[in-house]
Amino acid sequence: MRVPLLWLSDYCEPGLSLHELEHKLTMTGTKVEALHRHGVDALDSFVVGRVLSAEQHPDADRLTVCMVDVGNGETRQIVCGAPNVAAGQTVAVAGAGAVMPDGTKLKRAKLRGVESNGMILAEDELAIGPDHDGIMVLDPDLAVGTPLADVLPIATDVLELEITPNRPDCLAIYGVAREAHAATGAPLAPPPWSADPGTDGDVPGVTIEVRDPELCPRFTARLFEDVRIGPSPDWLKARLSAAGMRPINNVVDITNFVMLATGQPMHAFDFDLVAGGRLVVRRALDGETMTTLDDVERTFDSEMVIICDDDGPTSIAGIMGGERSEVRETTTRVLMEAATWNGPNIQRSSTRLTLRSEASGRFEKQLQPEQAMDGQALAAILMTELAGARLVDGTVDVGGPGPEPARLQLREERIERVLGTAIPRDEATEILRRLEFGVDDAVTVPYFRRGDVTREIDLVEEVARLWGLDKLPYTLPSRRGATGVLAPEQRLRRRAEDALAGAGLWEVCGWVFAAPDLVDRLRIPAGDPRHEAVRLRNPMSEDMSVMRTTLLGSLLDVARRNRSRGMHDLRLYEIGAIFLDQPRPREPRSDRLPDERQHVAALLTGAVRPPSWREGDPLAADFYVAKAVLAALLVLLVLA
Image (tube, rainbow, N blue to C red; front, side):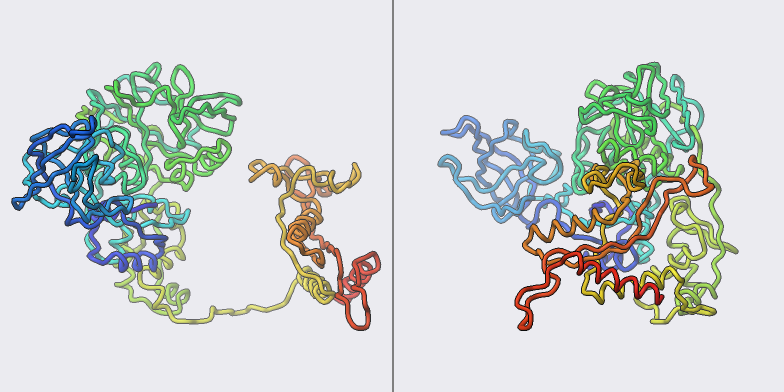
């Protein structure tokens, strides 16, 4: 998750240096993986200029020699290759010493024999957007010589965060702002979706049907008319670019901005291309196909959820939209969708389709139903402001908000017992309130933490991480009534390990997954139980698509890897589980579990003992050496 400080400061201005903020966030559980600089550097070299004249280059048809006023009575000659440069324009100018987004330092130069003292800039040369077809033409009312950083968002530091799966609320800029507020005490602005211009009720001409509420707990939609498709403003493009997303057009950029700001992915349909004005959320049919926005035809199975209109599939739920109803330059009516999907189902579907998106990365961590309306509210504000759209009255809302907020008890004695130190009640209360928990006679969990905070111990963790993990004393956990007796199975395993290690063998730990043809390659005869393997529904690869029925496969893999690197003398063993797909006694086959057994295996190759002065030749691994190892193992197991 990339968090531009320029954007974060819209919601919370921590008042700390970059490295101080990095330390605060990391120490409170929001780990900062890396720090980046996005945009340009040496900001003093970037100013607002005005083109006084633009003449054809004497020796190049596609170059223009411009005289540019950059303020303070200074006029620069700049050779420009943009086709749209013209006298009278107010432009962005970089002078000698300016550091461009790719790290290049600008110098005076000669272009086809004419001196050029600087650059007139396109938006991609400022890392604001991807456009390089022409220079940026600025507001003519801007004063010449004004620092460009005062006019355009041309540079920002970026925090790259590692967000754990239990914190999807931090896959949002505002979610990170909440954490910065809680960690530093800096003021937190109201949510950008707090003033919702929308209304409740049906939307004329729009019908939504959800056939599997378990896989789609909430589906919301709003209709916008009189939409004007065009480029986004510079501030929006700059924020998206700094967050690692490519600006496209105002409507698509709004959906991406909303997703990054709130954590709720959005999807915009061209409503005139939604057949019948009706969307149906259902499981796909086996073999059903659809062309996605990346122009690839995808094939579905019945475990996947799709969104359909009267002509068939039009979107893969929670992953990617379809090409048939995408927003395009001629779009005038947009149906904006924000839904909540079953996280594990989205993860499985994304893996099977080998299609991962920013949306699926959020949905698979299980978003909450209330976030759908957060996204709709912010999208409505931006659609009216940036696309000139008219919001049609009503909001389709199938499923509604989630369950009532959980109320948990938090006892001071529990905090002290778990953490080894007492935290004053007023400090714990203040910490929880900064995290937007309600605190009275109990603690009320906010909806965006519903999936993460479910027990009293979770509240203790929240208090501890904000109070300061580095302030906790070193204490041993209490062990009242605890004993240290090993179970018989544990004693057997330790005896086996001692015996094999004592015989000079090294332990390996192999994968519990194997290739389906392993037993055939080992020439295990037909009818042997080891042919009955448990097949995985969602394997990492075909070579790891079944649970192993023998330890020999992993031992041979280790031997092959060592021999390929010149190591031929190997003494290896492994103790681990195998899994047989056969019923246990008196267990119905329909609801059985695999028969899991603990096995031990050893592998000896090459020399097991190097040559010595008494024995000229090394002792090679053979039947008698293996027999001796087995005998040593059996003796110790009998003693166990």
